[in-house]
Figure (cartoon, helix red, strand yellow):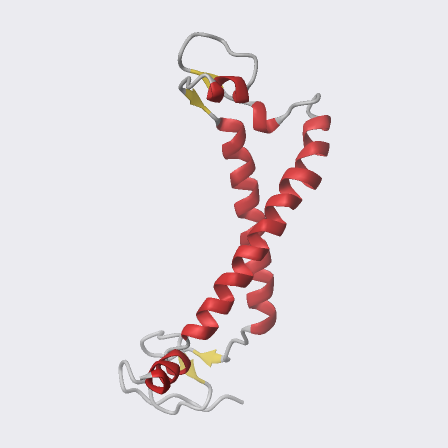
Length: 139
């Protein structure tokens, strides 16, 4: 049973997926720190000393001094500053993933069928699988 489980792990790429998840979690921690500790303090300083983590709308009408005080008091708040930080973090993660994918995932060149405009045809194709027309060889 153990050998069958090991074969399933290797065959289904579960190990690769698990390693990718671990790397993703580590990358997320680094990016969160980058946004919180490196990017947002100068941005807040440029915007007049704004602390994005402390931007919120009080829905209770009690006007707490800070977001922490509102949360400690169990008050309802809209935490739009935390949301701004999360959006910036997402943009940075998306950029890093794009750069990694662009570096390691090689795209295969394709050509377009002159008759039906299918654009996913391999360069070596001589007949379109969509409309069956002949395709001239690439020069």
